Amino acid sequence: MRTSRFLRGLLVAFVGVLAGRAAMPLEPASNQGTVEFVASTDAHRAVLFVAVMSPQTGVNRSMTLYGDGRLVLAELGTSRKVIREREFQLTLEESRDLVELAIDHRLAEYDETDVRARELRGKTTTGAEGVLDATTTILRIALDSYSREGHVAENLEKEIQVYAVKQAARNFPDIIEFQGLKALQDRLYQYWRSTGWPLW
Image (cartoon, rainbow, N blue to C red; front, side, top):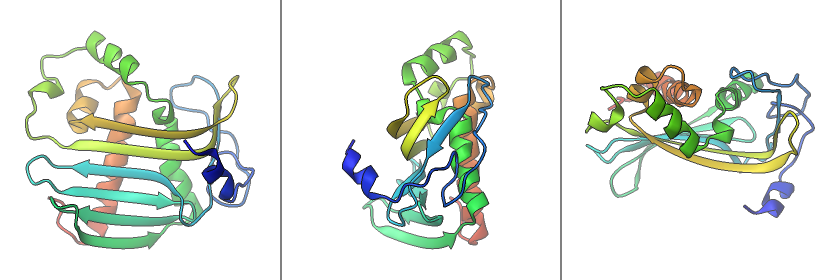
């Protein structure tokens, strides 16, 4: 984590907002304390990245949200060559909604060991292990400042990879992190379909 890179970005004193004005603190769905965060407004700074990779086709479809609200959809083939790319400009509300979707589902604090323990406690006979052709969902989130009530604010960079998110969210409805990843994956698909491009 390179702190200087964060500090070079334009920091705005807001809570849960991507550009230039204050907002109320975010109360997460998990009800475990108020969260405050600051995201860069740097047009070149990726704040949120969501990708879905297919093991069958090797195709990677992604959306990247930048600090200025620019959203880039991209499709990469097996050679990592860009096949399609489309750019949108989101409103402040739309940008904030995407970031809060991740924050509200505790994805900025994702702990693989803890999630796995909860998954094992709620184990079903139809877990993702039996799914051979599901996708892998990747989330990256980068915030200039993040803190939960009672904790010191810190720079945050988090990457998560989860296999068979759709199945995990269905099989473990009480694991809020799986629900958040599924919601972000669905949002990617929503933007993707708006282009008229085939999904798979």
